Length: 139
Image 1 (cartoon, rainbow, N blue to C red):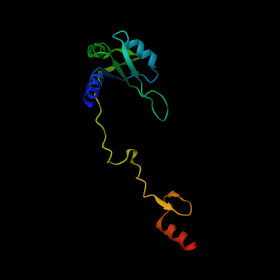
Image 2 (cartoon, one colour; image 1 turned 60 degrees about the vertical axis):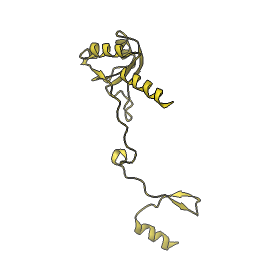
Image 3 (tube, rainbow, N blue to C red; image 1 turned 90 degrees about the vertical axis):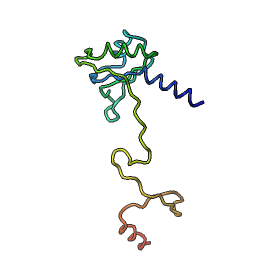
Image 4 (cartoon, rainbow, N blue to C red; image 1 turned 180 degrees about the vertical axis):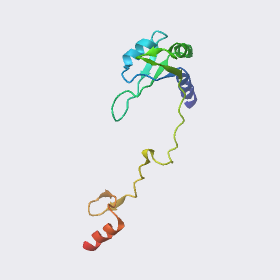
């Protein structure tokens, strides 16, 4: 049952293109209008920056067939939109990141959780070891 799904995913990926060097003011509607001159786009995805909620300057466009995607790459590569020359090529599937590696962003891994019988919930010790010892002595 898994094999047909994998084949469908591979077919969808081969019909997906990456469009880069977009102006940050380019909207999804403008890009859809430009791409629809080549073929019928199935999906147009403009990722947004998490911090500013503005477009990141690139997009992914999925077509119904590989031929339409190839024609779109040929037409869009070097074409000007919003005063910028677009870069278009086929979108490669990014390999999955290993889950056992270090966390993203360089943040430290949280320490062990401890059950506090007084509160009846999980909690982590706060502060340095000396501070924890001092609190224990004061009880």
